[in-house]
Length: 280
Image (cartoon, rainbow, N blue to C red):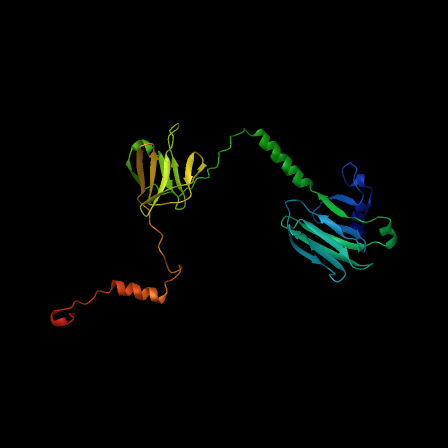
């Protein structure tokens, strides 16, 4: 207990001894994290103390020695812990395991007079010298390394169908044309005005809407063909790999009467022979 008492004094000493020299409420305490040390935390009944861990830490396990007299609750993000005693004289320990460190706390309650004087910690925070040193070394290493331009990340699909052919005026045909199964991508040469684009469905042409991405015109659909028009010029590009969607076992299934009608339509009718007799 000698070590825990010593650390409690570190928490209780004036603010300038445990935190940077700045105007800060004495009820907000900052201490240095040391692996393997027990942290004594003095609390007050009817008050809660928040323990703030590093931003890159996430609480994984919490264990309280006497859960009947103490409440220890992490926040949703997992980097804060709220500790609260239920009665005076409560005394136990608290173990917190994060994704990066292990913390051991000794929990005590202060007397009513001390609590009335405001001798209570609202927020206990940590500094991590090892992390700060590693971050400083990484920053120095990055600054010393020659700067290399970042390669732009393409948003275009890697899996592409490029099986397209055309008929008509070649001046309307795009330089690049492919689809990813959901959208169709077209690119014309620099300075070439692109034509109006029509989707072909059931033999009818419908003007399509499109967007732009990395120099491509993107049509949010695929189809068997698209018609390109500019003035009196016309061309048609064909998707030679296009396969129309087909119903499968996971699709809505036909009703029984639909199947009967389909069978009747495909069953050959018997021919009527001489004298009204049906032939086989």
